[in-house]
Structure formats: C-alpha cells, structure tokens
Amino acid sequence: MKLAGLAGATSGVVGIVAGLVMVVYPAKVDSDSYSYPFEATGFTITQVALTIRDVGLTLLVAALWTAVGRSVVGRIGVMASALAMLSLAALEVVSIVVKDEDSVGAYYGMASFAIGLFMILAGVAVLRAKTWSDWRRYLPLATGIYVFVPMTPGILAGFVVEQLVIAGWMAVFALLGWSLVRTSTRRTT
Image 1: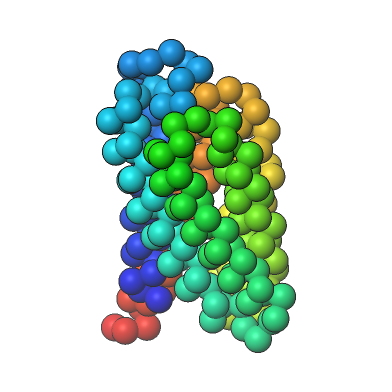
Image 2: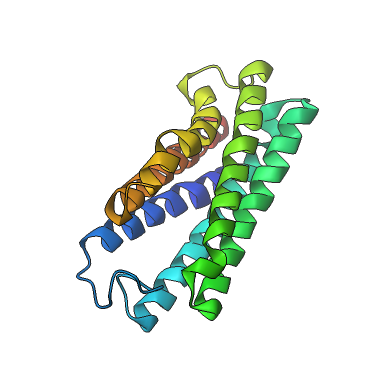
C-alpha cells in the first residue's frame, strides 16, 4: 500500500509539472502540430514521462482493492479503472509512433471517461465499505467525478485550460497517493 501510494503521489506530481511545463514552454511548432508545444524530441521525452506517470497511477488505483471492501461493483471499478489507466499509458506510446493526434485523440477521451466512470464506482464502494473514516474516503470518488466536472468542459476550452484541468486531476491523484503513504506509515510505526 505504501509503495503504491508513493508511486501515485510521485506520478501525480509528475503530471502536475508536465501540465504546467506545457503551458509555459515557448512553442517550437505551430499550435496545430501533433507535438505542440514541443518539437519531435521534446514530445517523445514528454510522452515517455507521461507513460511512466500512467503506470504509477495504475499502481495507485489498483491499491484501492482493499479499500472497497467486499463490494463486487467496487472491485470491478478498481480493476476497470486500472486497466483504463494502463490504456492511457499505451496511448502515450502510440502517440509517439503515430505522430497524429487525430488518430488517437478520441481514444484518450474514451480511456479518461472509463477511468472517471469506474473510479466513481470504486469511490462509492469505498464510502459504503467504511474502511476509511476520515476525509480521504472521498478521494477515489472525487477522482472519478473530476473527469466529468471540471476536466471534460476544461478540455473543450482550449490548450491552456486543458493542461491546467489535467494538472488539477493529477493533484487529486497525488493527494490520494499521499494519503495512502501516510496511512501505511501510521500503521507500521
């Protein structure tokens, strides 16, 4: 649990930094380029970092298995969210090879929607299982709801807002990871 929490917290921070860098980085290509704002090498480096981020977030989501208690729906939510997060990792790699956002853009949306939907299922199960009694019991649910409000409308608002709302989503993941690290540390001391 502690390792998964650390992976999730670190991955969330990587996601925050990546989003902010993309907002402030001086564009090297036209805004309609698949690699915007980076040239090909910068884009590849960013996509590799995002792939690693998504694998770390997969570990975090999978660690929710015990928090959902015996809920079958909750376990489906955890498994499906983890698989959808892995699909995001795969899409990061595919986007390096394809070099065309139009080819993979819809798949990013479908994977994100799947994460949102299944994290809501897992989040409701965490609340019902009462395995966590403090504020963190709301984090899995918040992670899922965030996909639909504010992330989806934010993504439609343009590049800068898109990167900022994704960074916000990463902040929720980072907080969830940090809470797992804290809980694991308290149990072992």
